[in-house]
Image (cartoon, rainbow over all chains, first blue to last red; front, side):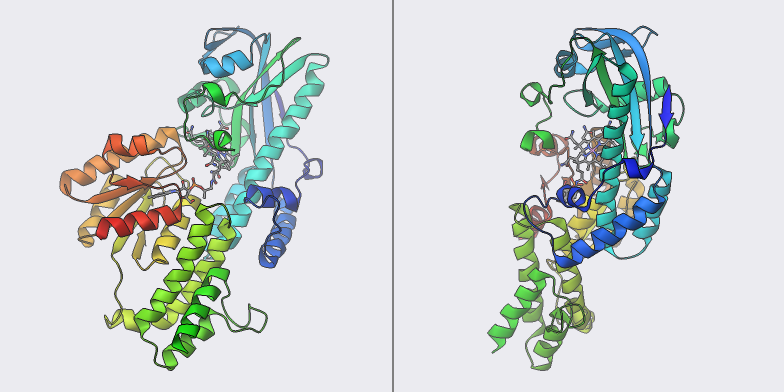
Length: 222
Length: 217
Ligand code: B12
């Protein structure tokens, strides 16, 4: 298992990414929002302790299920199983903006500055995603000449969220300080989890919305 | 004259201009509301102007032309105006449209979406009681018992906690068979709302406001 606490300097979170997370695409946010984002970003990058972990397993895919050699089965659904076709091993991962950020955010919420809470929330989402990207780049180093697929998470593309339980069983108790509730909610809230297929011939294909049943998914709306 | 003040008030609310100190020396909602009331404009007309500003920004958000921060700024501006209207609410001279009780269902801790809906519904002239996150059926029942005639809103962000909406809805309806309940959150669809028997669903705060207004019309 590889477990790491990336230095923030190696995560490339810019104010522009936070604006995009808040929905501002081509438009420049209001001055107040810009000022708040810049100052919060500085503050948060100074205290946050993002972490990621991944574990490699040999395995294979049959139908809609990933079978790991150690005995675990992940029913990822037909969309994801086809996107991971050809994988010979799998990385099971988790990444989080960390508990320090979670506590920071809880403190903020006690106040009544909703705008500040909201901007901090968007920064937290960016940190979680960015830590995921960093994890992927480290995985790349680890697997050398092999290729890997995109990362896929329970709750997307027909992979039921309840499968979080099996993922967390594989990752061991509290990976990176993340806990999983009965309803499969991770705490810290700003956390992600999932699987990446690895093999000589796999491709980094995007999500396969055409086949997915989740009509409300935002990746579909985009 | 009044017309002009009122439309200025709507514009300032929509633009999130709170007060002179924050609006670069220009009058904000705070000053203009006070001025309008001082000049004898009816408080309910003032309220209407504020609501109009909020609904304009809610509409733009629903169309993807404005963003969450815009709604938050507008709500702050609205609150600055509401502070001047408080005495008229207490005296009964201005009335709320109804009471809306909202919460994120048990098992779920997400609150941004719920907070936005609460804020915009309040900004549309309703009294809002926010029960917070991870709310169990008993807490909803208790709140409803204290506010006869209220409408309830349930929020959830995950497919796993979506199921808990049905649990809350059923327990509420058992005690209050005619209670109106609306639901929302990222994974919610019209289909799901109909299946569990909710009175409606909306994908954004302005949708929630329109839904509520229809329900009490
Ligand atoms: C940002 C984001 C993240 C971030 C931050 C998460 C957070 N909640 O803070 C990160 C990257 C960390 C993340 C992680 C995960 N996420 Co996520 N995430 C999102 C995303 C893109 C936006 C969520 C958001 O903040 N929206 C902004 C707020 C304002 O919107 P909202 O809460 O939906 O509220 C609006 C409406 O729904 C409505 N509304 C809300 N409540 C109510 C109530 C009433 C009465 C009414 C009328 C209306 C209403 O009005 C609100 C205002 O417009 C959504 C997709 C999307 N676009 O919705 C997925 C989404 C929520 N995530 C999803 C999933 C699956 C996950 C993960 C489980 C993935 C994983 N395994 O790693 C994890 C879970 C994290 C955890 N703690 O357990 C799914 C959830 C559905 C499901 N399958 O269960 C979604 C819907 C994506 C999808 N597949 O479509 N996520």
